[in-house]
Image 1: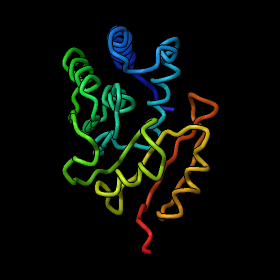
Image 2: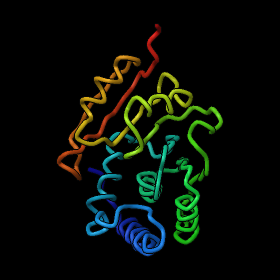
Image 3: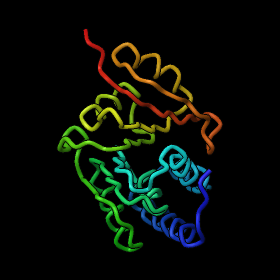
Image 4: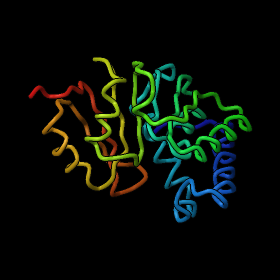
Length: 195
């Protein structure tokens, strides 16, 4: 697991404070997840660093929501993160937090389908959609070196089976470090099967 410096821990704590405060008037995350945000949000996000060793890699966080996992990775020193979400209230929160905590990230208020085609080293997502849909969203952002890292729930195996009907890919599945029901999928060589 990735280790954090004291300044990174402090900045993540400040991010959590901002999240809790903003969540009082705008629903960014479920209230029950803020009982132990380090476990439910931060550790869940941090584990993605195990799959992304190079902090200069270009990363697209699809459906970032409240900035999870992308903002956490930016705090950890990843330099080329793009956060995208179609919810204006969530993007406003992310912009506010980035400004207040001096976090550098590209922030896009758009639907994933509307983003200009661009290639990324990594595509990441947490609780956005089923794997089949994630592949549809991902397809225009990948090249033969792109790795997809998706945090999934207890149905990850079923979603892989379902996706194989339309897609070819190699995957590794890892047990989540924050949720016994969760999985981290690392996917390479994604391509649409020809009919």
